Every structure is written in C-alpha cells, then in structure tokens.
Image (cartoon, rainbow, N blue to C red; front, side, top):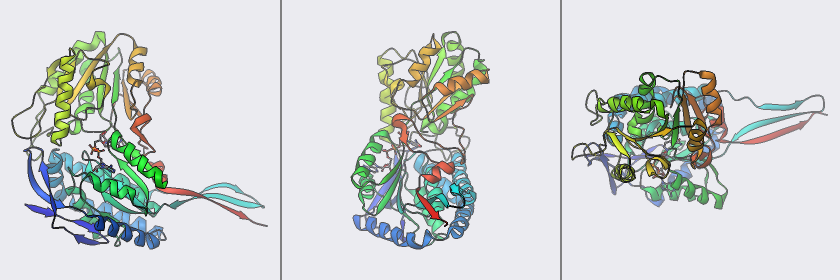
Length: 468
Ligand code: NAD
C-alpha cells in the first residue's frame, strides 16, 4: 500500500506511525499517510514563522509564485485526480475539475489588485488604510472538496503575505499531501507546511500560540470549538460551516424545465456540498409533477465507484456520514415521509445511497431541519409563499438559498428576503473566485474569495502622515 508523507519547511517528511485511508467505494483502505506528532506541529509552525519574515516583504515574488502554483496544479491534475477520486469517492472527471478549479483560484489571486484606500490627501495630511499580513495561518479543511477548499485558503493567504500550516481531513488527506508535494517545487521553504493526522491534530494546531489566524471549513459543531479555542488567545478566525439551503419553487415554473437544475443543485458531489440544495419547497399545484420529474432523474442516475467510466455520483465519503444520512431517511419514514426514489443502500460494499427523494415531510423531521450532507432530499409542499419563506428562513443555517421562477424580477425580490450569504435565482451553486462566499447565522463568520476573502487574511493599518 502506498504511503503519503507531509511537507514541513520545504522537506518531505514521513512517519513510522501511519493512518489508513479508506476508499469509500469499497469500504477498504487503499493507501496510508503520515501521522503528525506534537513535534511536527511545532516544527511546521516554527518554519512558517521563520518564512513569514521574508515572504511578507516581496509582493512581486508572491504574485509570481501564485502563478507558478496555478501552472503546477494544471500540470499535476492527472496525477492527483485519481487519488482524490479514490479517497473522496467523486467521479474522476469531477476530481479533475476540482483540481483545475484550484488552479484557477491561484491564477485569480495572482492578479488581484487591492489598492490602499486613501481617506484624506490634501495640503495638511495624507491618511490611508493599508492591509498587512497576519502571520502564521492554520488552514483546516473538510473531506468534501479537499483540494479546491484548500486553494480558497492558500491563494489569498499567500497573496496577503502570510505563511500557512494546513491540515486536511483525516478522511481525505492524500490529495492535499500531493498538492503540498507539488507546490514544494515552487514555494520557498516554510511558506506552506501540510500535516496529516486526526481531529486532535486540528485542535493542537488551533491552540498553538504562534498561529495567529485560523481559516476553518467544516461542521458547525467543530466551528464552535475552533472559535472558543481561538478566543483564549484572540486569534483571528474565518469559519465556513454547514448549510441547509432551501430552494423555493414559485407557482409559475414549468416542472420539466427546472427539475434538472434542482436535481444537480441538490445531488452534485453526492449531496456533499456545503451549499447544495438540502430542501425544496414546492407549491401544491406543481408538487406531483415536479416530484415525478425528480424521481425519474434520480432513477436514471449512474451511481458507482468514482474511477469507473460514466459514473455520475459516487458513494458517501465515510461510514459515519453514510449512517447519519440513512438514519435521517429512517427518521423521515417513521414520521410519514414517502420514498419516491432510492431510500436503501446500494450493494453490500462501500457507502452507496442512490439519490433519494422523500415527500410528505416538513418541520420536525430531521431531513428538513438539519443538514443531511448526502444523497437524500426532502420535498416540502406549501400553500402560502410567505409561509414557505418563513420556513426557509426558520433554521440556524444561512449559507445559500435559491428561488426558481419565470419572473426574474419576482425571483430577485424574494431572493433578497432569504437569510443566506448567497442567494441564487434559477440556479444554485454558481460560484466564482471573485464572488465572496460565506454564511449567515450558524453557517459561518467571515467570507472567502474575492477581495473580501483576501481581506480576511489581513489586518488593516491606518497610515496618517502630517505633511506640514
Ligand atoms: P468536521 O468539522 O468534522 O471537520 C473539518 C475539519 O476540522 C477536519 O480537518 C477535522 O479533522 C478538523 N477538526 C476536527 N475537530 C477539530 C478541532 N477540535 N479543532 C480543529 N479542527 C478540528 O467537518 P467535515 O465532516 O469534515 O465536513 C463536513 C462539514 O463541512 C459539513 O457541515 C459541511 O457543510 C461543511 N462545509 C462547509 C463549507 C463552507 O464553505 N461553508 C464547505 C465545505 C464543507
């Protein structure tokens, strides 16, 4: 079984202690990776702190290196993608797209210009607001999009002049270790360190006194722990947490036209997208037709191991998550929910739940109230649009939301009423490097991407110069 090592201070580092990495399509380990010790955490933070002293000074070099990171990820995509597909479960072509996406993010930040803001410039004085890097950043990522979510942190953090110690999820460490190995060829030693290990490694990193900023993507429960740990030492935090995105279908749509968009808004990456559609609100008169459409699309979906050709959806990434989603489907059934597609495990190996559509559910059912993060989608019937909007807004989450309608003006108006960091009309999941992305309420604090995401990796400084 191949073993994958870490990168600390520009060196490849492996350990005697290894952790297995499971391929969720088979439920069996297919590779192992290093397990970082406390000494490795210290070495990585010391290296990052040392590298920060010079890295922060040369913006032109940083931009050049970001461009080189973009190029090397393009060049290595075909090598990294099969490992990403096997550790995460996603189809190989989606894994390729994820790595190309990460490359695009580096390219975007290589060229992003954020000018100092001049507040006053007259005969008396010049007052401007400039952005300074923070120092050593801990970048902690989840298992659904290990490579692109890492790039959302690394690229703006580097542009701002920070150095990073990254820690991928123990379910999907290998692609991040491969990215670290690839970027080692272009980045100065210590600028990027990547450590693998369990959840306790994340906690250890967030406690380290020389880590000054934590950029965390993961669940609400862990995000709260990260924030309380950061509070003790007043570390800066950005938290990108879970979502329970509603899609509200208005009464003027043609179900034949919106079903495909709704289906992929919900099931992309086997539903394991923080801002996927996690519940659909549909008016009574369109309910049966839309459900029939969605069920038909679900039944036609090719589900299987991500490395097999033509597969559209892979397994759920890990046993714990698989069992959680199955339990939510059972909870819905026990409360009157009807399964119109899927609903049961596929095969006896791996963690496959084919796309599952559940009707006759509403508030009080876990699949509606909580984040499922998997291949099960509740459809909630509504009579009154205001009530549907109230239900859509009636959770602790606020990551994304969408409205589906023939009237763009009406859709935009309703989109503005929804409590979410991103609201879409006739679309869900459309993201870009220049668009800030973050959650309201429990879905997060701060944002990633665009100039806003860059600013999260800086602290502002006022430079006030008396001219006379
Ligand atoms: P998780 O919270 O279990 O783990 C995320 C990361 O935190 C992992 O690397 C984990 O090892 C680490 N970790 C665990 N305990 C820690 C601690 N005490 N201190 C520091 N780090 C710790 O989340 P997950 O199951 O890997 O990911 C799924 C969740 O992530 C879902 O809720 C999903 O919605 C969310 N997510 C959010 C976004 C977003 O941008 N808002 C994007 C993707 C995923």
